[in-house]
Amino acid sequence: MYGLGLAKGLVVTAKNLVLPSRMMTIQYPDRKVGLLGLSKATDTSLVDLIRKDPVNVFKALLGIADVKTSLPQHPRFRGEEFNWYEQRCTGCASCAKYCPLGIIEIVTSESGDQMQEGQKYHLDKFDIDIGRCMFCGLCVEACPYDALHMGSGFEEGKYRRQDLVIDKRQLVSAKKKPSTWFRPQLSNKNYDPHKGKNVKWDSAGRHEKPSLQQQQDKWAKR
Amino acid sequence: MMEIEILRSGFDFLGIYGFFDGFMPDNLDWLVFLITSVILAMVIINALVISTALLTWFERRMLGRFQSRLGPNRWGPFGLLQPIADLVKLLTKEDTIPEGADKPVFTLAPIVFLVPALIVFAVIPLHGSSFLGRLNIGLIFVIAITSVNTLAIFMAGWSSLNKYAMFGAMRAVAMLVSYEIPMGISVVGVAIAAQTLGLSNVVLAQDIPFILVMPLGFLVFITAASAEMSRTPFDLIESDSELGAGYHTEYSGAKFALLQLTEFMAPVIVAALVTTLFLSGWRGYGPIPGPVWFIIKTFVVLFGFVWIRASWPRLRVDQIMSLAWKGLLPLSIVNLFVIAVEVFIFNPGEAGLSTRDLLIMTGINWSITIIALIVIFNVMGQSKLKRPEPVALPLANMYANTTVSKKATDLAEAD
Ligand code: SF4
Ligand code: SF4
Image 1 (cartoon, protein in one colour):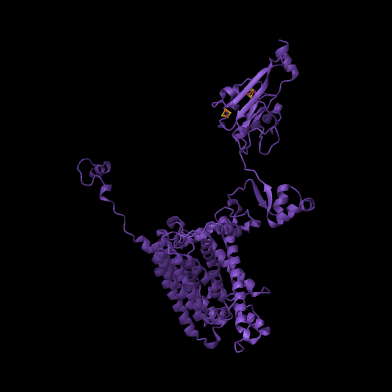
Image 2 (spheres, helix red, strand yellow):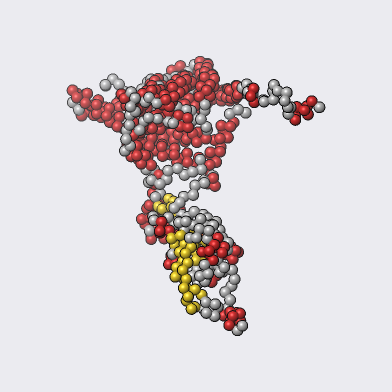
């Protein structure tokens, strides 16, 4: 019948209004919550909340309390800040050689450490200029010792270009939440950097760490 | 003044006048009059402007939800302070006047646009009587005053020396004048059924809300009214995708704020009118006072307007005119005819239609409404089918007059 299309249009918009599953907007970096939303987001009961944080409760009653939100990302998302384990890195500089843009700068010197396993270099400098990085991930693919991983974050906005160069100090002190991109050992464990804990250097590798006995069998008693 | 019945129950002109008259000396009557007018004006303007501000917030939030977004939610609780932010932004902008503009008319247009809207609200009864007391020609007053809008829009469009503004203004005049006719005729139906022209008396006559008694009249009125205030689906006066902004293309700053204010005020006023004429105004049930009922009903109508705005696309110019003249005009005449015959048969006299009469009318009118709507939809839909087949241009068929080569399909047919 003619005119039914009008009713159909109204039904479509009414569904948008009623069904929460049709709300597409994801609020970032924070969202306004009411009282219930606040207690849910901070994971405290209402009574505790009123006792501990009355200012925020009052704000929530007015609907102007903020709760930080993050954008949902895939665990294999190639993030900006790199994830690097000094303990795993041998200073072989494969990553620097593979980088198509040549933006990884590595300076090493002899350290005299771990002579038995075949000396480990001392890393004087390990800089990545993420301002020019295209996040291709070739450096991560190239790393033979699983020392370098893609990061999982993206909030690295800076005011100056030189701040975008990540140096060794930053890499060491950063949170260890590696992306599971090109790291099957992490994705096999169903690791999600956005929800999971920090990954220690000795559990980030493809193989278990060999015991001292195994090492000696392999190298010292040859 | 003593002869006129003083309605002290309500907040209206006579009530305030009586209050001040009580302790002012007799020779200061003019001052009492002035004070009363100023107080009334302040109340009406503030009530309307605040409700308009709330409407802009409500409309944007609801539009957002209807379109799967959020709408303004940052500034104040639930984004409630957004209208204030908008106002500050508009008022701090530079107020420009185009060089070739007709300056007095350009400046006057927003005021001419705003004032009728405020005046109309003065006669709408919120509780027994309106701000101006019981005006016994309320219906005519409303229809007459709202027509001034057309003039204001034309003033704005013509004076700004901009072709888009001019287009908008020309469309506005053509459209608003056409839609005033079905709107007027459907209002006549209300007046006949209520046996009065006063808005408060119309409400008193609605033992059954007139939306049930004359659904056809309601549909015509609400369609024509949303065209009158140029909202989607009839917003081609200022269709942003075609004309920039229509008649207010050249406006900025405070003048633009006034135009926008009036534009958003129109739904409030139309919703109040619809409530009065068709939804039995302030009358309701239970302990809830009349004004609250009035606000609830107005709110429901406003929600309907927003819903329609979110759902339906804009009509073309020719479609709008054909809807007015081929669709709404016959419907409104049918409605008027049916109501007139019924009232003639029941012949209520002074007392007005009884509830039994209204119930019988409801039954008859609903069936007539459904039949009339089906007929009109089919008649208007048929015209779409009769559109001539598009004729291919000669150039489109390159092989028509040549013997050079034949297409494979032609060869196959020859076999
Ligand atoms: S991700 Fe690609 S561009 Fe960035 S540092 Fe690694 S190899 Fe170079
Ligand atoms: S490829 Fe891996 S081990 Fe070699 S220098 Fe780069 S991060 Fe260190």
